[in-house]
Length: 101
Image (tube, rainbow, N blue to C red; front, side, top):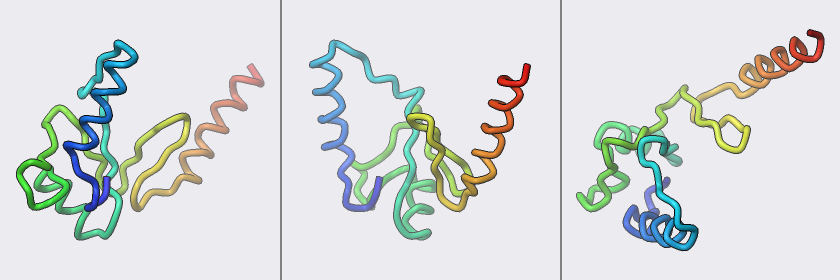
């Protein structure tokens, strides 16, 4: 999320999507990766909100990915101040071990 994102709009989109698919959104498995300046990311992490507005408060069930932590989505690792090369080297090493077994 970045500072121009509105949490309520995002929640409405997710709820509509889930309703259409008769699915349930699992907040306990949800991760948010703050995008933007270091100052903005710090605001999101410390205050658990995407703006100064209380309506943009992030639920306690949702994990916020801090700097130097990674988020895995669709087999890809991303994060602020991370080294993806190190992570991919570990994945490739495991794959080689599996192929050589």
